Figure: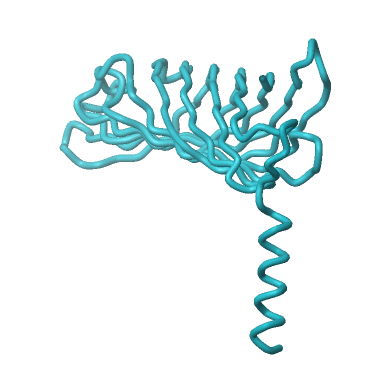
Length: 194
């Protein structure tokens, strides 16, 4: 393959993916979601009375999250995402504000079906609960219906959370100090696209 053919193929591929400047399309879109997450596995690291690091499982009870996403289309099928949410975890019981960013790959024309990869940074309401946290979210969202000129979205996710628990209250009785909590969960999400 010569250089002219390669440049022609690359130019055509780029033009097929670049965001259209049509007036009916907008580069900015926003959604609000309610996420229900069921815990899959939790691992708690702590220091025991002998000051040795121990690990145990904790029976997590999931979480509830209210999230707002704002998207900016950089290409026709690719968006960058800004995320802000309030999250309430059960067992251990704590709440946080999550801010983050991500990417969405929109794979169906004229529908809002997408795959997403997101990173979130948790800020606790109380540092007695945890110092900071991080979340990776991988998901699939489907555009299912039109309600009052807004799109109804249903999503399915896998979440991986990591919380630094230093200087927080221990989660179990035989711990003298907490170290970290790692948790994974699966979630379902209901949202509206504005």
